[in-house]
Image (cartoon, rainbow over all chains, first blue to last red; front, side, top):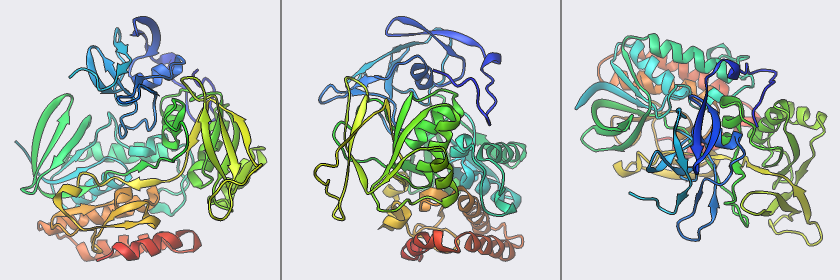
Length: 102
Length: 357
């Protein structure tokens, strides 16, 4: 769900480049340069990873790189802060299980 | 090893002003920020600011971010390093950071820490369910990324942030089910409160959240009325359907980077939590380390900008850039005092009294 009309902000999305990335192997659309977390939320994805201890679902919380709630596996790398990582064409995004692989 | 005269950590309102103030005195400055653009939390503040001309009163945060960021980039004495997360500060003046996946080291003669604040969390059942967002995250999604956080939102906390975020959600076309506030009174300014009330959003005071519920993601919340000892009152339970629970329960200073240096800190609830002790020049108990903005005690962007000026001027002064220092310092200090006058800043004034050296 994206904002198309806003009284203050110009929505420049039409001028931005729409790209394709994958989440859990499934193709999704996003915009180049937005954060991976924002692209996922826009596509209705809420569960980003599973907690280390009790395997509980976790999603975005702070969105500014402070907490570790949104850590995911991006292009094979674990523990990527998806609220800080900017989306690129062909990016492979996966849910992270626990501590991920280091 | 990279070198600079003054390093400023954090490119929000306090950090950008620190860098500009130090550079205006003649110092060479390096500004580090973990984001891909400068501005800190200003980049998502779509509302107009208070204060006076020196703090861009009447301008929106997003526009202030652009103005300051341009000034910083145009200044030849300031080196800006974005995508740079500082990892550690060491006693010998060396700082380590990661920039674009590369590990780097930097030495400086003076350090200004302007790292801002972190969202506070709240204890309730299932508070880790996806869909429980900090108020700042809701703003980031909507106002910076142009993405809706959900369809219907329950906001916890009726301070200024809770009220402003409620208004911004309504502007973006999201339904705000209610704002609940544990205190018996609404904490935010009347001007924000009245806007929300006019738009028909209920604000429930003396209410708290008991639990969130939902399968894999937030589907609703159980709230209830609380008594003066913060216990839930029997028979007051209400069920709100919501796909987002937005926590606007305050911020706490982010000074993790400074802790290992062993500086003196105090727990000051009026400033949001653990705050560093500092003198009137904003120098901490470790010589050569200054603080400015929310990391020195949570206030507003307007005071962060003034503190940024003071810390930048003082850091430059310490290494010999003394051009009209006393006069410039006094002007900023007086301006800051003006911002902290009045009833609304009473708690901040009391808090500052506890950390002033």
